[in-house]
Amino acid sequence: MDEKTYKITEELKVAYEVDILVVGGGPAGVSAAFSASRLGMNTLLIEQFNCLGGVATAGGHGHICLYSSWGTNERIVGGITFEIAKRVTEAGFGVHNNSSLDFEVEGMKLVLEKMAEESGVKLLYHTFFSDSIVEDGKIIGVIVQNKSGRQVILAKRIIDCTGDGDVSAKAGCEFYFGEDGTGLCQPATLMFTIGGVDYERVRAFRGNDYKLEWVWKKAQENGDMRPFQDQVMGWWWTPTRPDFLGINFTHINFINSTKAEDLTKATIEGRKQAYESIEVFRKYIPGMENCYMVSTPNTVGIRESRRIKGEYTLTKDDVLSQRKFDNSIGYGSFFIDIHNVSGPGMDKKTIRPDKGFKYQIPYTILVPKDIDNLLVAGRCVSVDHEALGSLRVMPQCGVLGEAAGTASVLSIQENTTPRNIDIKKLQGMLKKQGCIIDENDIVRANK
Ligand SMILES: Cc1cc2nc3c(=O)[nH]c(=O)nc-3n(C[C@H](O)[C@H](O)[C@H](O)COP(=O)(O)OP(=O)(O)OC[C@H]3O[C@@H](n4cnc5c(N)ncnc54)[C@H](O)[C@@H]3O)c2cc1C
Image (cartoon, rainbow, N blue to C red; front, side):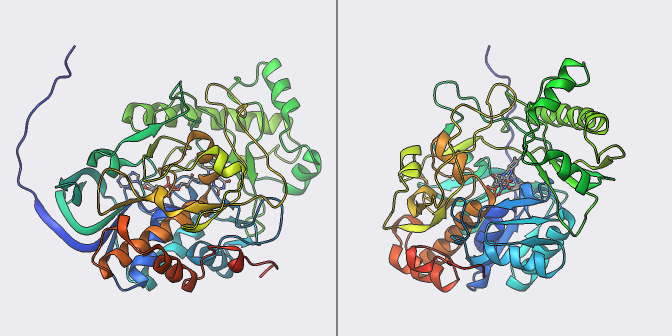
């Protein structure tokens, strides 16, 4: 049956005209916007929620990893992304080392807003991107909806940091979706934070058994838990909030995050699983007898959806062969971390590499092949399903964001398109900003 439609014609107010518009304020969006604004461009960042940080804040996930190559202490991420880790630690909201940052979600929000203010970027919260305006193969603006109404924002360059690639899809870019063949995406997870935890006892109970699979098996056999999960995905602790734990445990399969109905379903089911988990924790985990719900976040966490087809698509083979690229904008190093697309636990495609594993990220995965003056950063870049399993973590999303912000500035300065910038100049600018692009930049000691 044909879809029912309703035609409207409307004339919209142009609310802003800027040099660079960043859509989405997650790890990719903040790095893109801060870098562009620090380089002197009139930059606007729009965000649907009331904070910066994406999954790290609105998604309730207080753990960022890895800044180092796999299993080592050599740091392969710098620039704004590592600066954020240092600022959060200095502010007393968490602790970082050369590999990871554990932090209080609320503190991260404050630090990112401070950094935004210092950079000069204009923030517009509570603003939802709804459509792209494309003329002659170039994006020239977007339509947004917020309390002020439906409005137009015009920009010389636009960076799509929505995670889902909303701007690019609406602009007509082609995209990949989910795993090859089935199109299924990794499951969604509603993070939650619990309080009243005696962490020392929890730690002693776990020992080296990170996953505690036998506990969830027993709880399921006893009828205390539905089979949505079979292992701990992450219990995140920071010494600045010692009786709290951030829980990565809920799993909601068969979700397409580009559909409002699926997001609603995932949120409701995620919250049910979270409360069910707390009952199980109280009964089975020493040190959690008195734990209670502190918060569920603004939004369910999404691991995978659209991946916008770019000038180049980074593949599993590139990642596993630790390929080097002349047009490198930084490094990735996380294992191929794929959660089961159709059930609990991890997927068979998960691969843990050898110690020291790292690979370079080529600039061209940020450049959509179909549309000019548009760059993509974050988890919606041009990668295959397996490469995304590694590249999707927050440090790499930040690396991609800083490269996109800087490339947008360079393309305006050089009066060319982001597709045609001088890559050596971009790499020079990124190095000046403290980014780690090649072997010479890698930080070998704990600094
Ligand atoms: C449950 C879970 C656990 C994870 N664990 C880890 C981990 O331990 N360590 C790690 O480093 N990474 C982890 N990741 C991966 C990582 O958090 C994400 O891949 C990363 O945050 C993606 O960054 P991003 O900027 O592309 O997107 P996001 O963080 O999703 O940010 C996108 C932003 O865009 C906004 N937005 C989206 N659409 C619109 C729109 N139409 N209009 C306006 N605003 C919009 C969103 O509100 C959001 O703020 C995890 C992810 C999940 C879901």
